[in-house]
Image 1 (cartoon, rainbow, N blue to C red):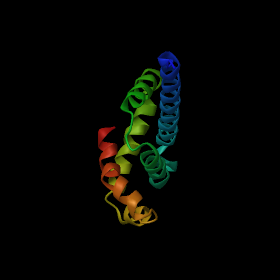
Image 2: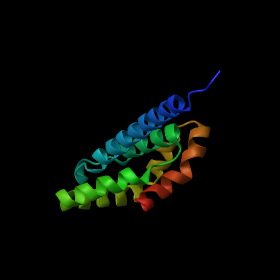
Image 3: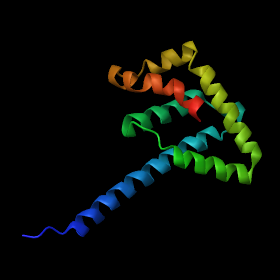
Image 4: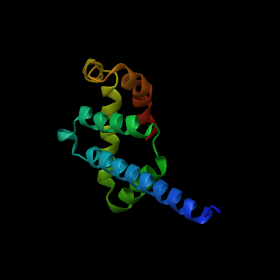
Length: 125
């Protein structure tokens, strides 16, 4: 019985493509929150998206982030300034009691999986 390698490769590529598209969509949603005007920006909402992403996918795809930033920088520099300001707020948030209280809502396995990554992610961006 012959195995159709091409057929199996197509299935694998379609599955990988679907997962990557889902991850790209999640990154785009995260950036929509980061684009929120500073006055209305809520760190805990942004972190919830980030935690959910890390729990689901474990690693962040940085290429879509670069693409979003490149696109936004060519469209509107004010949006980039807003994102940077909100990222700074997120960094400050990771050192606050509010953050420690907020992260306590997650179970231990989720906290252990995400705690260190969450503190370093805003720096990576």
